[in-house]
Amino acid sequence: MNKIFVLFALFSILTIQLLSQNITRENAPDKYKWDLSQIYKDKAQWKQAKEGIAKNIPVLASYKGHLGDSAQKFYEALRLFADTDKELSRLLSYASMLFDENTKIAENQELLQEGETLATEYVTAISYIRPEILSLDKEKIDGFFKEEPKLAEFKMFVDNIIRLKAHTLSQVEERIMAKTFGDMGGAAESIYSIFVDGEMPFPEITLSTGEKVQLSNAAYTQYRTSPVREDRDLVFKEFWGAYSKFNLTFGTSLYSHLKMHVCSKDLRKYDSCLEASLSSNNIPTAVYKQLISDVHDNLGTLHRYLKLRQKMMGVEKLRYEDLYASIIPDVDLKYSADDAIKIVTECVKPLGPDYVNTMKFGFENRWVDFYPGPGKRSGAYSNGSVYDVHPYQLLNFNGTYEDVSTLAHEFGHSMHSYLSNKNQPYINSDYSIFVAEVASTLNENLLLDYMLKNTKDDNVKLFLLGSALDDLRQTLFRQTLFAEFELKIHELAEKGEPLSGETFSKIYLDLLKTYYGHDKGICEINDLYANEWSYIHHFYYNFYVYQYATSKVASSYLSKKILEEAAMKKPVTKTRDAYIKMLSSGSSKYPIDLLKDAGVDMTTSAPFKAAMEEMNKIMDQIEAILAKQQKK
Image 1 (cartoon, one colour):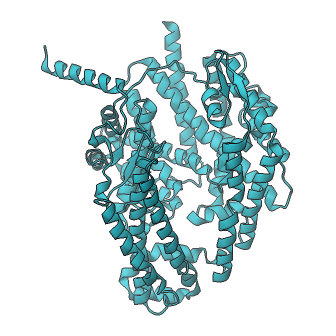
Image 2 (image 1 turned 90 degrees about the vertical axis):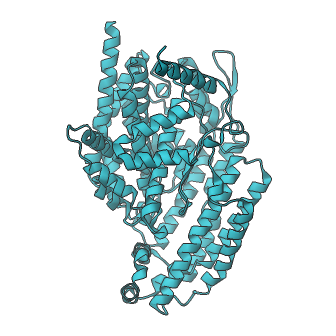
Image 3 (image 1 turned 90 degrees about the horizontal axis):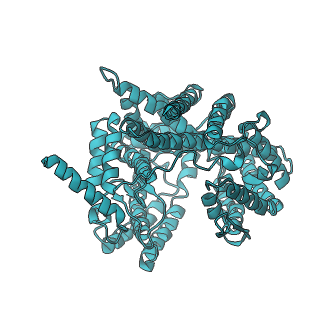
């Protein structure tokens, strides 16, 4: 027998055995666990580092009132601030990740609490820095930068503080704002969370199988995907019926939250709550409004998807209850961790050998904690806060295609952090959500392209394409619907208009019917679902959700160009190189400018049009496969 075939057969058997076992963090080989000893050798070394940071805190506080004494003093204070912040970030990262390994270990929780207590002392000690910088004449600060060349790395940091001077209050007023909004600003969200997660009475339903289910928030997300339409109808009717009983309560809670935003906007002298929110990252409000305008101009693409979904589901009329059920036949795709590693490193090859080799190095040097275990934190994340070491990833890998996609997604974040930390001083190494999700979703796009090119099975292709299509529906259209709702209710609150749950529901229902083509007969929306807004926790954030959509738009635009350039007979790397430069830039520029440098101008409609082209291309591919299958 051919030796290569024998090795392949043995590999396949081993893979099947691994997948059939219940691999947990406890029984997994060390190579599938992150190595936190690269941060600190042990807890004793962590304690030593904590003592060192604690000694720096009073020294930092001693610079209060002296930032303007000289260029040297100014530099010394900022240098100590950055170095202490970096070490504190390292300290907290170690403690939080150690806790995440097993949240049941009280000693690890106590370690994290120690770090958080120290962080509070640190924040208090440095609270003077921003107000004091703002109290200095710009001419004096400019003089400091000319006199002391080592201040150059702090230019963006200081410029960003000065940029917000018109919206920064006096030290006393800032202290009052911090105390008031710090203590009470999250009250509405806290009350909402406690109610929906702990005290809200949810109905019990009986499914067609005879199974009785209490329809909690988690159960709703699970059972709304049921392949049985009658079950979906029951789930939607009872779940939203339960929420409708508390419309007044939810309305009062959200209105209280809006009033806090309006109050802050007024005190800081912004023209709108939207401007106040976007100003921290210097994002023009036009970007937000451009996204909403682009979506309305391209609702035809969403409606095409809805018609395709109706056809594939074989229903006479598509309804809102049908949007979460799978339209693709079940495909049993299973992967080992090694399979996932191989696939992910292969799919990112268009980003160049340096990117791929760094990713391989990360896998070989235990950046990733793969498997779930008792007490391990759920979900997934990438932590790039250990500046002098490397990024870390937490996964809960169970061998599904979604887990492979999550690995690609999180490694996008990790590579962003790695490149930024490698190429920027600490003070400029962080980056905003506005660009962060570009790095992660671009890797998802490359994974989809790789999988489609290496898959011959039409059912697998339909699964991959269908998943990508619904992701576009939920990320671009659904999140923008949320963003438009958020903008509308803030604008009404700014005008001083009273808002109730009934008003919120009317606004939300109008948006639902417009987006999903209710009046055009495309997707039927039951009036009961008008109160879906009360289920969306993100409305208690501050103009956050639009970034999911803008990031997806930008990554679709960039990945398309990167793949096109890589496929040329004489491949070019213009877009790839510009993209890698963006990942390496941290916060050395404002996020909108970083994307422009990479070739994506989010103030125009061009990136969104490219995303719509991609969405239509996916539908073309699905329709072609369906036509081929019908001929058989």
